[in-house]
Length: 212
Image (cartoon, rainbow, N blue to C red; front, side, top):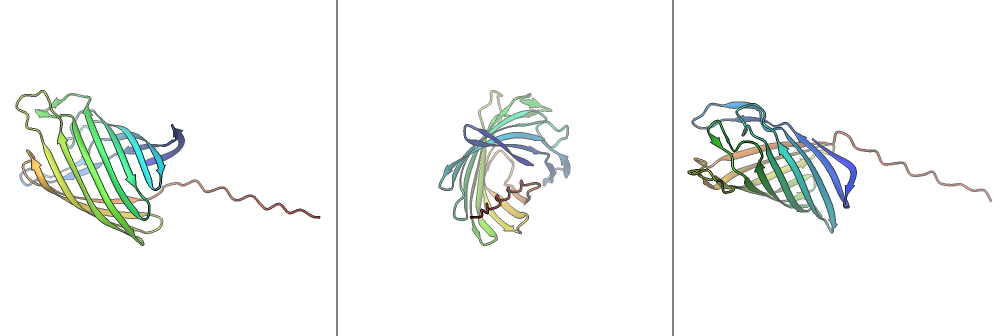
């Protein structure tokens, strides 16, 4: 959930975000699991540069959920974003930097700092939105001896439809390269974007009628 507040910071628009993701995970050799994972709290400031170009900075924290579906440690995450959103295009790049604040080792697993990069290049055709997406992730160096860093690159596509009061989007990606993940993954997402509340614009003032 995103609250676009009326607050401005150095000319940028401040937004507050919260997410309570619920995951369903099934591996080829492991059991299927589902439940709450990594509650997320964030604040973002976005600047309109002009000409359809915007930049943003997001600071957030992931909290342990108490389930087996996340790292069970606290992570600070910051994001640097740039987007072009004029003429029906959405050309966006977001670079994520994650820093493990809690224990780096938990239940025998090691959690290093990381970098992620998300890319989107879609175009609207009437109410439809189509285009490619891609992402990559890499572990940053850690002092644990023998740790095998994980890296991956995935590409895919997005399709969306604007119903007016809400927008539906679905996208799927497939790994084209990976290191130490044990195999290539296929991931799919389904997203509903809907405003829960929007300030109504103030009515225009009544015309002044004068008698002469």
